[in-house]
Image (cartoon, rainbow, N blue to C red; front, top):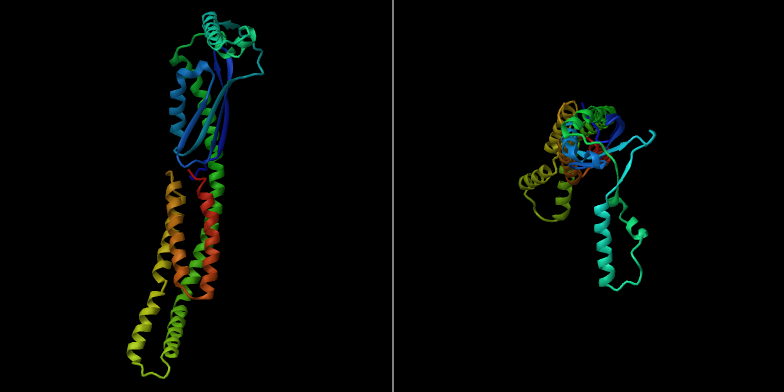
Length: 293
């Protein structure tokens, strides 16, 4: 099933008799980029968090946020790291002396380093126990994100298939125009050559051979066949269970290349109009492909 790279999931876990809120957000990105914002308590399981997230997705920028539920009464005691206070005070005093600062080092200056001085009193929990408690919540959040990605992916697939069918239909119309286009090209070239050689003796057979060669160079049959083949392959891959975002991106580039060649080679007003219509649809498909995992 096609999956979008855009998704969101939220769940709760119970750690140390406290509720922990886990949020997972995913947006477009060319590669996989996992960013984790967690309280200090969870630093020991950061690598496990990233590993589990990576097992759920292969592309996208994933932001994992973990925080304690602020709706709960917070009766956590605060600890003061006195050795750290003394160390910071000594450093500030040393700086004051070296640069001849007139002001005294006071409590206000120390509060600038409050993150290093104060910390909540946290119960010690070993890594294995913490991960076992936390994993279930993270998994639920990831499953919720995945479900959202699949719903959006299905909508994207429907839109792309509709547009591809239109592209396929237009390519078929171009294919039907080829015989008349080649014949008209030959006739125009023949008249052009006669006009340029007016009053001169011309070898009709040689002229027809040269006209045929020039007309053949404007034949777009091969390009149309390749474009239709790529379109069918695209439709097949959409239903694949694999991660196909990069494959679809490649195919859109190939279809675009063939259509551009058709537009450059064909000297037919109707074909040129159909080429513009196809390129318009392909651009919309390309934008959708950028969000596919």
